[in-house]
Image (cartoon, rainbow, N blue to C red):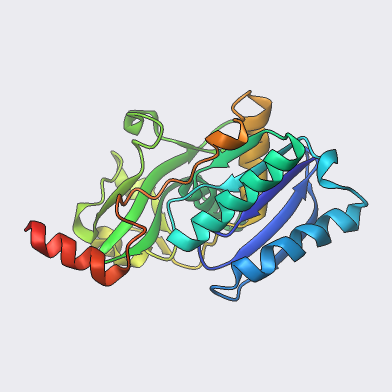
Length: 238
């Protein structure tokens, strides 16, 4: 059994996955409530199945990019539970989970997942469906662990070849300059179910890590600073 956590953006979502399907799930779309909600939600899904944390095989979490506080909460809770119960952890890209949600919600098989990063920038990455029904990064864009993920201005989003075959999905999709030329789905949201499916596949493939390696990915180096401070720093560098 795998526990999946998603707090990297607006929603707080927790799921238990048995390798084939989600057997328990809780979700709450109230923004900025993740800190208060996540632990009771974890207790609820475990209680529904009569399980304790020690019965889990692994914990998967949405590692970013996304909201700084949301990503930090996700990583911190995953680390704490894993340390306390000696469990492996599976970090899952938030953008990949968003792409998986596009397949779950609309059966889209080729997408550019886009999240609003504020400050006139977006997080973006291209994915396509594999034979296992999982969204995977395009090989042509894989430079390193997160090389396919972009933090760029609206008009600098790198699109795949034959971009017209791809849909833009996520809350930042309408911001992309090329959006007028492509199908746009702004209502696609990643949930713990998407984290669970991707995380379980990665776990079975031997890609789990120890708790101390379950690190968040922000893409923006100064993400810990307030937005006004980030903007001031960027202005000073110009």
